[in-house]
Image (tube, rainbow, N blue to C red):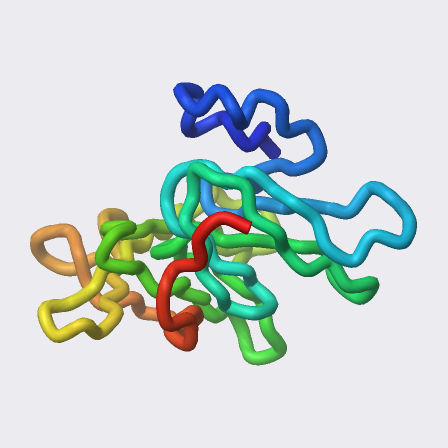
Length: 171
């Protein structure tokens, strides 16, 4: 966990955010800390951010209003992020569609295939928009990567966020 200003220390407005935090570089968690509140304002670091529940995309470097119903904590994810999700059939890579403005994205997955007793294997993934607008996910470096250091993802991929038509401005 890191403070929201961690990767953008030049954004002085993020220094005052004490009730939200980053998990890695890609996930921003914005819990509700007062009873009866059903939405909240959150200051976003630079970049584009998807609401993980609604898949609405917000432009960063501003304060936005996000829904905070009783059944979930507001979580936003950086456009382009590759997030491993454990499911009954194994691990799926949730890829939050990179936007033309956001540039390529990335993510890490460290599988625990041996019960934690073997050295960790780090799988690095990148995401980008292809020439015809499709989302391309590649595994880069390390075992499983092809000649030149990159190959197809090698794991099931689910692209998220394509339903959001355009960035939402300030609340």
